[in-house]
Amino acid sequence: MNQMIRKHVRNFCFLLITFATGLFYFCFYLVGITFGVAMSFTLVGIPILYYVLRSTETFLQHERIRTKVYTDISVRTLPTRSQEEGSLWEKVKAEFLNEHNWRAIIGLMLQLGIGMLSLICATLFYLAPIILLFAPILYFIDISSISLFGIENKTLNTSLLFMLLGAVFLWIGAYLGNGLVKMIGRYTRRLVKDFARR
Image 1 (tube, rainbow, N blue to C red):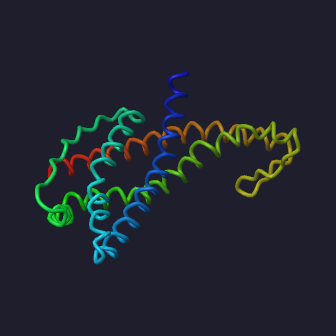
Image 2: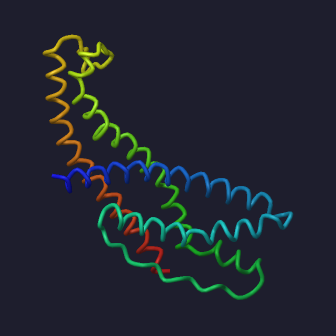
Image 3: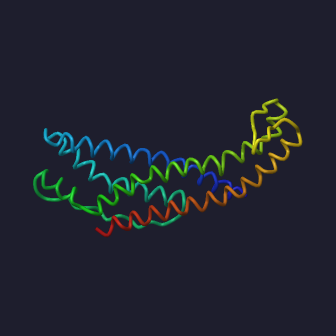
């Protein structure tokens, strides 16, 4: 039982972290690439663009490790990229024309959408059922602001019904949350595999 609870807590944390990292990747690449391209005429943007484009390997390593820790889905290790020879302009050009690099960037930025779905599902699958489980306690301390399908928590019978529904929703939500976590883990594995083939 303890192991099952720990697994569901890990799944909940994984879904929340997926939202946070998805938001970070989207903002980082949107701002970094836009700023780097816009400032490249002053030569300040070229090193910024190079390091932003080069960061995909680091972020994919982070995603790989996070997926392994939280989901037990094994993701292959990324081979380290060798440093390109030549001037900074040639390095930026090589990174900019690397198709696998752009696929990884788009895949990481798409995690914002996955993260939003994860946040909504974490709330529906884990938090809402727990709040429903505490409906009788909330009824006794006279907090009747919980309502479900238009029914408010105003009587003891209603609060007991909410508690029963919370237990059912928690069981179903834990199952659905586990499936969602595995789908996100498989997405990360495919992203890393595609990047490693470059």
